[in-house]
Length: 145
Image (cartoon, rainbow, N blue to C red; front, side, top):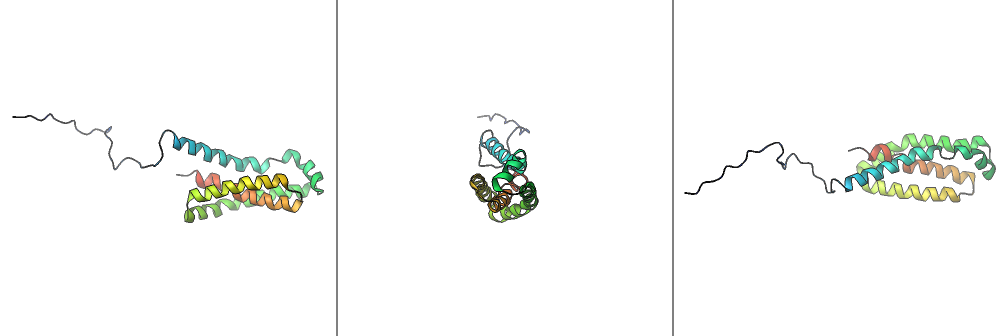
């Protein structure tokens, strides 16, 4: 007669298909890289809101406007930055996070290049609004689970 060896009872260390979280990413590598990239991009919102405070007088001279008008670009950025997470979050819910994130990051890079090349105050003001719209919604909407 053949005897069967007893099998070990299931323990808490035994993986269970129902309790394991599913992910298409390699847990140790890709998840950390993605989290680092999203965190780095979210940091840009804070960075770009105040980046040119030290150069406000030079910008006023370059664009031949008052310091108050240059301060308006900062105020406009902040005003749009308060509304952008709502708009971006709604778009991400409908279209998905990845396409919106990719589009906004590409738009942000393009707007930053355009700001460097801006030759009028109106262009600078409009581009600062676009810059705020492109980057401000990323941190709150894409860092969540």
